[in-house]
Image (cartoon, rainbow, N blue to C red; front, side, top):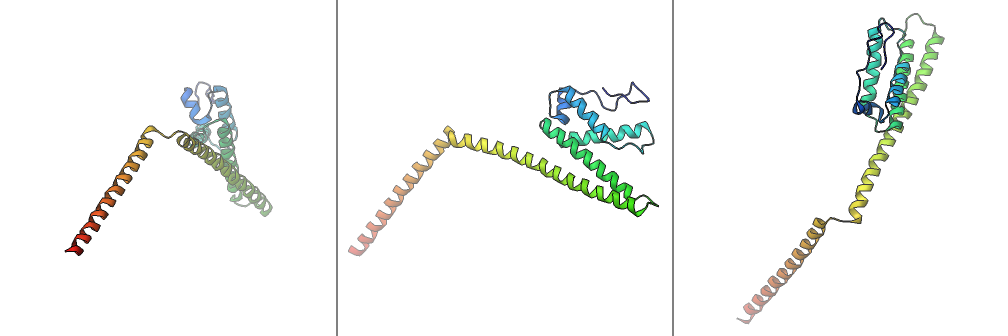
Length: 190
């Protein structure tokens, strides 16, 4: 798949099977999965990395973060890459704000961009949550409709059984009340 510049035989990602790339791309397409990896790698800041291994570790961490998001389809995978890229950019701006001997104008510039990126990050997370909630609601409504349209035989039998029990208990209650009334009448006659 991807090779590092210094060592073309070494790849930062293990070879993955169909199930493996579906776990982070939400897609059956290996080409789509490879493009996501390329996008993750290009959106990961590596300018201050001291070695090829450090670059690799950062890219693999971003890949694993996307895998942990567990996108269910291609749209969620693309949104996941955007979320990760925005997160990385915001943190890079914040780290530049903390550099020593920096002019105030540079610090303010980076803070302004960090704030804008964090607001974008928040909107992206809200979009992710809305998408997941809608999918959950859709699944819930679908199963509820299926249950309402055709109740199971067992549910029908349970309802019939409850109706019979209710009817039997009403009859028994009426008999008890009648016998009580008969006893009161007998007591009064005596």
